Length: 227
Ligand SMILES: O=C(O)COP(=O)(O)O
Ligand SMILES: [Mg+2]
Image (cartoon, rainbow, N blue to C red):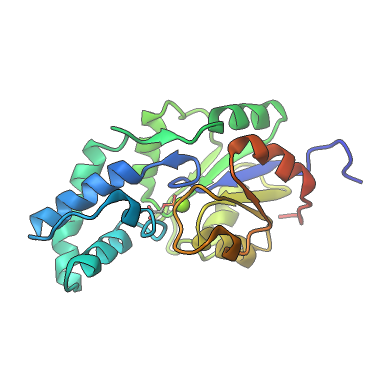
């Protein structure tokens, strides 16, 4: 019976669009790279539909939205994107409302926290540090930490294992995250305010939340298979 006990020992989170609204800083870096290739800027709302598969995929979508796209163009734009984004990673990127309180509460419950993101590991670490979160997470797995990335379940399994293992749930914002959790046979809570390319109801999440205040009640209602 899981009446009063919290059902998870680890909760893993996606980063962009789930814990942190990174869209404006990602947009500035993307537009800087597009500008260097003679392309027009893209508005931040469009970029919100393009994030979730890593920086090269974001640049690919940006190029496709503004003209032709090939790997040579991506190769040229990629270092421009990374240099700008690295220098401005937390100019405006901030946690969503209620994130700090929810993470504090999970910590009080003895739950280990992990990040499983498709952002490059070095960028994820830099963002986490810029937000003063370096002590919050027991594990951070990026899109290049392992040979495979989300939606392959391996990075999620690794993040959970590095955080101590046990019953786990994943919290994300995009189809990449819900596909990852499904492949891992783990429950997935999707935030409705993040970055996605389809309605939240079509993500196939175990549960949806509109605010981080709803996270712990939603997790409490779930049951988890053993990892
Ligand atoms: O950088 C990306 O494209 C995605 O990052 P996320 O996995 O944290 O959403
Ligand atoms: Mg995301």
